[in-house]
Picture 1 (cartoon, rainbow, N blue to C red):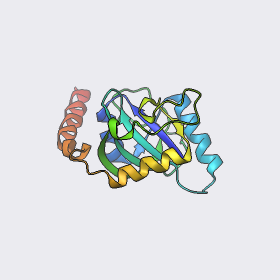
Picture 2: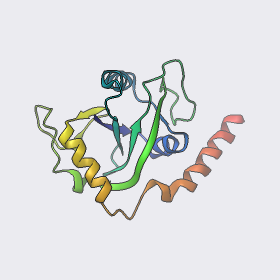
Picture 3: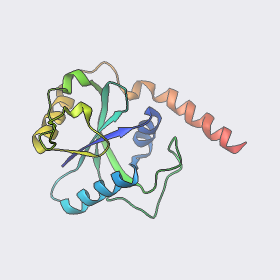
Picture 4: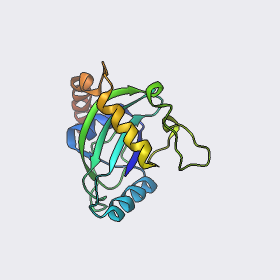
Length: 164
């Protein structure tokens, strides 16, 4: 199964990459948790990440666990995300919306493009497979990895401010 993840900040995607976890909104976590449990090990659940208003998707991760509602993480930019999902990153590269816009959500009444998805929007299998194919074959010149050191410094600065 395939889902779109919309993040408010690139900082949070950096943290997901670094700590191999994710957390969504309460309804988003419920949707992902339900899908994971329904899937019952019959194949992977892929998460396609995009930062709001960025104009691109920035990576793909596999969901490894259901939501652990007994845990929360303090790494996020905002302290409102409850629960933790373990993820394994597969692709970290920028794929512009223009390359993906032709993929339509046939599971929505409006048949909108995948680039207009909301957080935790499930993709039909053929749309998810096409997204994976594009991530595999697209020759991207940019990725979050190029900014990794920048986000590491920001994270340390934020932690130092929290200690004051």
